[in-house]
Each structure stands twice: as structure tokens, then as C-alpha cells.
Length: 71
Image (cartoon, rainbow, N blue to C red; front, side):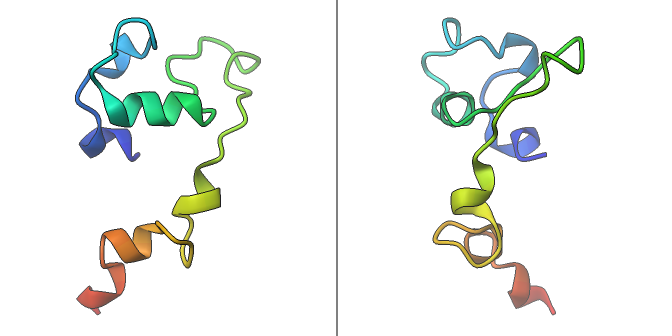
């Protein structure tokens, strides 16, 4: 979901060797994101997004996107 707005590259190019200038994509890949998996086995990554981006965390989506300001 995050990649829809935060990526400079197309997800079709989600190969760390071809997206050197796409910092958000490299960040996602370096922290376990899996894009373009053809099988369930390939999709079994170890995403670590929630460590920093879960609600209430230092870089949580609630803080960086000011989610609670729209109530």
C-alpha cells in the first residue's frame, strides 16, 4: 500500500540492482519487503515495517500522515 505513493519506480522494476536511485524502494527491500512474488513461497519475506511505522511508533503512519488530525 505504501508503495502506491512513496515509490519513484514502478513495482515491475523492484530489483535492487536496477533501482539505485529509488531510496524508498531500497528502504523497503532492505527491510524485508517482497514485490512481484509469483508463488506463496516467494512471498514469505520478513517485513519489518511495523517496527518503525506501526501506529504509536517513532515513524508511525499516524504521526507522519497526521491521521488523527482529520477527526
